[in-house]
Length: 456
Image 1 (cartoon, rainbow, N blue to C red):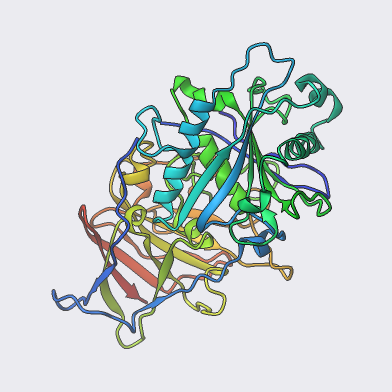
Image 2: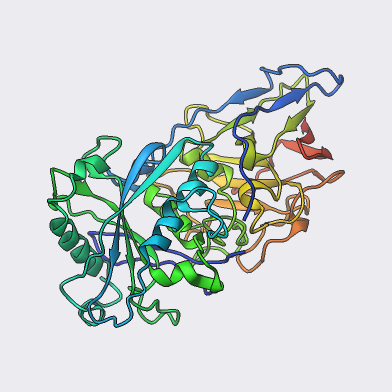
């Protein structure tokens, strides 16, 4: 499917869209830790002077310039409203299927995972999403009215009008303060699943799946405002002739937290160098989230490699990231105060298991190296993104000695992962300077990747 990003040229809102690539998996393991071994001994020891825990210091509200985004930890209640347009003769809404897609656990009819189960696993059980499904709401106007009355530059206003109608309609039935888990004065999130046909020809941005953020602070129900909302067609649940396809819903839910797309939706600007080659939930709409995303969401913490000049080499055993959330950070001059909001390189042990098993972004075990340039502007938002800037926010380094990044036009491939006996001798920062670390993959097993890391 064609990749694209939906953006509204409006001061009152911002929109992020989805792309879909689909292909079930096993359950997760969430309780383990990384072990470290000295290069000169087979006995395991703790190398506190060589590895430093990096505290998560990110705030997705600040990074997006908003307040009231959907919380990414704890018990979070989302209001889900099925929308039936009165001019749609065949009501495609199936609330039983909707409930399976969003709330089920170990449901065989859901080929992948429900949204709830996916995020429970991906967050290492730090997030528990609950979707409260209302009765079906019929807007006052037909779907044709919304198509004709709102053009592609302000179509989110059409959905905001539907949301406000529905909130008013259900006001006597629901206390909306029950949907504010972090007590910030905002409904945690609103999902609308509509029965109008999805526009697969991309002529009308309205009839797609997208996330937006309402910035009108004067819209209040039960003393509650709302910010993050999703508008998605019922057809997406049947995409690719599946019984219950949840990939698009999972992707859009990440936008509710404030996570951006990692694909290039604007090929006319920015750089073609870098990116994730569709190997990410926020790029190809498949698999697990990457270490940078999970750190932004406060689910995972990296460890900074800190080799002193007089001890220039050691060996680390790194466990599977998807199961355990462990990853390494390589950087020359890492500012502990900035935490993950700066430039650095990530090493993660990828395995085609857990949330990666169904889609198999890669089919083999291997170490993935990511380049993150997460500098921020004076207003606290990201300086770079993966579409319009001359430097990409996040990219994968290939195994070509760091000289080659995956490009926007490149599809994911097993040979971009580092496997046994492969090494990286050099890689450049965005400004062209060299990273002062190299590494070699010693062994890959089902339990861990053994990596020799050297400071040059």
